[in-house]
Image (cartoon, rainbow, N blue to C red):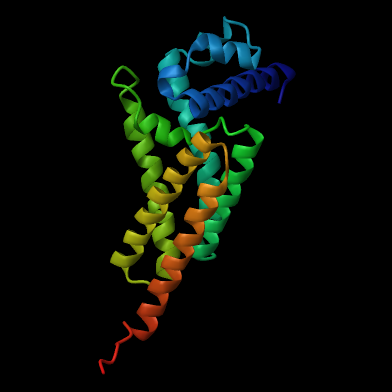
Length: 206
């Protein structure tokens, strides 16, 4: 690879990383070209050189870039079962929240609930990322022995609960909500596992 190509890729990557950071912290509506340039240190002329479609392209690619980081964690953990996957997700977010001083939220949530003025494709991209996470979790629970319907339901419960916990962590500036939710999810998963294996316990009446 030539030095020019390396520099070009480096500038583009810095801009994507900066855009992803803004998306996590301020949501889609808060992502501006000026902020991306300030954080990345890239010259203004590089915007349309690397992103010909301007802000909309930066939004879409920043969401994909940020989403892929979380997806990689989920995909790698999925083969080891549902509880392991939940623990890895929690560990990932504990580190990110601490590193960002609780300013970073989930970029996929930010894109999914963005204002109507944002790039319409954001919702579709966010939906695709969430589907990938749900499918990975579903596979993990199926590997644990759950039926397809139960596995899919547990997957949705985990995503909804953990994403909500991240929001609470940011607002309270504490990782406790994430840990509490993870604890309750593990209890739920283990309880469902017990019922799957042994059925619902009967209570004898005196």
